[in-house]
Amino acid sequence: MPERLLLILAVLALTGCISTHSVMPQQTEVFQPAQKSEQIDYASAQLLAELDAGDSFVYRLAEGDQLQITVWNRPELSGKQQLGPDGQLSLPLAGTLKLAGETRESAAGMVSQALSPFYKKPAVFIGIEQYAGNRVTVLGRVQNPGVQQFDRPPTLLETLARAGSLPVIDKQATLTRVAIFRGRDRIIWVDLKKLLNRGELVNNIRLKANDLVYIPDSFDTLVYVLGAVHKPGAYRLTPDMSLLDALSQAGGPNDDAAPEQIALYRPGKQAADATPLTTLLTREKMVNYALEEGDVVFVPKSGVAEAGYVIRQLVPGLSILTLGLSAF
Image (cartoon, rainbow, N blue to C red; front, top):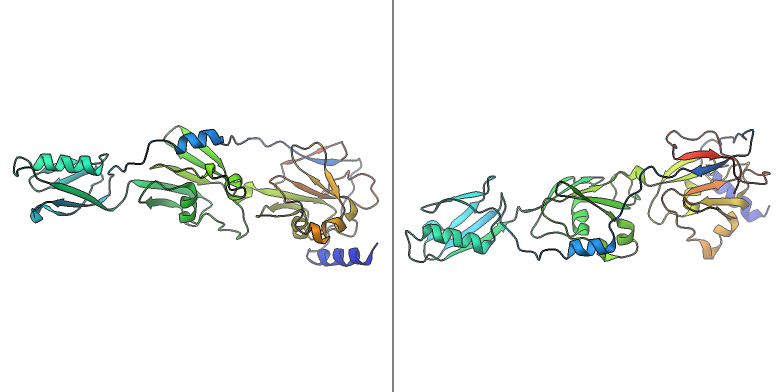
């Protein structure tokens, strides 16, 4: 074995814990990732475009808005007011008015009409000191879950940035999907990989008041490293994670490994891609094989003609894996 490969394998092995000896099953077996029990139906680009091209934005007063009401030449009637939780406002002479749901212009007209029995053509102006109507609730894997307030309907990225959705448990975690709950009967799944990695801005949908944004937990994005490695198991997928990154996290190939036959199995593909470790370490391949959710990296055991066994000591929770009797 070339000296360079021996040195590389020694370094990778040092990153692992105590070596776990692989147990050869009595018959040739190979892992096959089971199909996911639930496939996410992402919103199409056409649907997202239609949603984003909805009603042009006209702000309507909402409960909790801080208003600046000005009645021309009537300072005793002017001042700051807050819409109550019932959407109503009480003014001297004008009485109690329900202004929630009105535009600033229509609300000013209502106040003017209520004052008209006492003043001749009162001129009323309404400004908004603090908006409360553009509320978006963000839940899930975020630093600041809860209600976010905006001056105008925010985009999805603006909401995620405000909520601090980029990783809270692991600074290298990745976002792949987000669900937008709109009204009582609509869920819009957005593929964040297309937005963040490919720059497809049609996925940066503009949210509406009272939308609920949910970011799934990071355990939904996993890759697997199995076979003759020091620490076989599931590993969290991180941004731009490569095959070599995953292999290193698993402690590298153990003493029984055949590193010239490392295989990558991608769900949905009929065959696995076998690549020598030395190829992955060449300068032009340093950025190698970016992994995707559900990928399985498999290191076969030395002396086995086929990559046809699965190590027995798997960590709990790998129910996504099943055993079959076919080889690569």
